[in-house]
Image 1 (cartoon, rainbow, N blue to C red):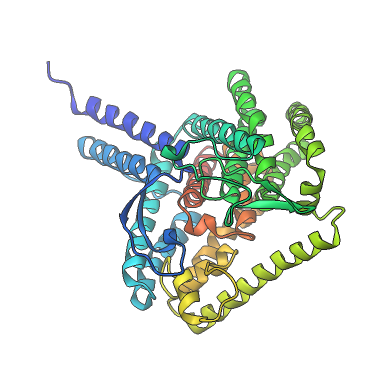
Image 2: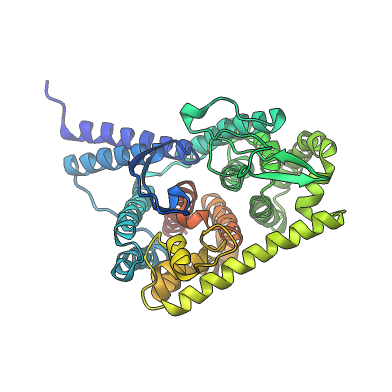
Length: 450
């Protein structure tokens, strides 16, 4: 008996969702295939090489399965909320326009195609991810796996021999490895399987917020599983020593818990309080053992030497911002090309006291690369969801899916004030576009049922 086409279409839909879930799980993984090595000394190779990440492979499978499903069972594809898709489409178009004046035409074309892929990723979320389980479960798996590796690295102060999975070779005494220095002693920060502790910290913070939303708003069974995944993520987040990730998680979590308190939903607040207490008990031994290192990151009890290091780090960030702003002013019309900001720094400033890199501020990096129109679209994507929220905050605060998406977007935005990886790095982009897609889908659903 011949099976009807809708059966094949449904099977392809399931395969696409599984591929989507794997994309979330593999998002932080730095394992990659180098499609085209393009060394430009002294730039970091990942800035200029054409790379295929593990999450790219699963995303391509997702697109193929979804496309096959649409061919077998044609249906209307929704763009989601105009508050998101219009500026997101504009930002994608600005990426292509930026190639016209790019410092590296081939790189910008490559990055523009990747941006189209992320727009399709957004569309898939809006149209196919109807259950939050398809997002929360893979986020929980990601948190558990990366936490296990990160905690092991931090406790052993070395890599775990997982180089086949993309783990960097880590030695706190080696140059170029990210460490915290206190009293002349170097402490290795947790990397997980990512490129940098800040990226691991961001991925953990974003995943923990999705788990927290399941704990606050989910049913009993899902709540229990979410708690089991949540708790190991807290010490791992602490071990990254990523201040931007700490701040993003605290602000996003406080937003959700605070709104529950405003509307006197005390059961949720009590769960959050017990969860917070459990987290403190898990983190406390590590802080107790390494108080000086946390003092360096929080600015508490700094020695004169530590104060100088903190000031130097701040001066570095400000120097990058001033340099990036100068390039933006000189190329404000269409930018210097998507993905080309490190090369633009090299070409513009021959005598540069730092490693060539984008400013640690996503809005400015987006403005440099895509010009004033790309910056405007990115700015709209940052603030339009919050303008919409303020207009009907009582209604939206009663929508669990939307509140979780709001918290995720809030954390991603906060991280973007201190780093650029949510704009330029594969893992950061997945989380950023995931946040936009979840918000758009949840907003449409809330309005339809409201």
